[in-house]
Image (cartoon, rainbow, N blue to C red; front, top):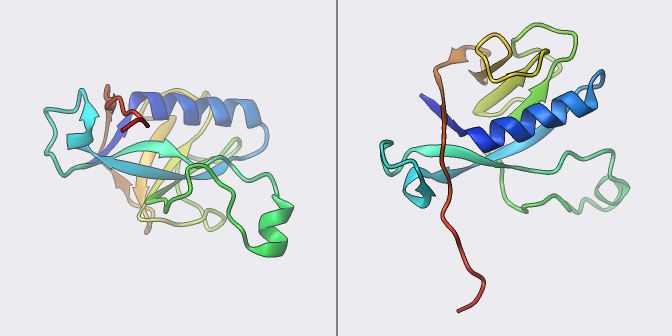
Length: 140
């Protein structure tokens, strides 16, 4: 089972909608369910996709110097790609990851418009959860 927060799905679909007719590709990362409010029904160690990396619109600093200025600066465990004029599937053009989320118009969180796949292109069971990271403070 692949878990993703409703808030992340909404943001990814907004990115795809705003970029249409161009495609969007970005990294997505996980948070353990135990660190989320509203995910108590999930196993504590279950990875839940909660965050995305800002899409890179051809960042010249990264291209020239190899400096990753993405936010947040951490490894992504998955990818999100939008296919404005393609089918809901992983293509050879997509960057592969352990989990690849694909969206197609009409940019909705329905099984015919948003799905999760493994790196081989096999559709995975997907559950959208109403959870969010616990409130954290920067003060000590």
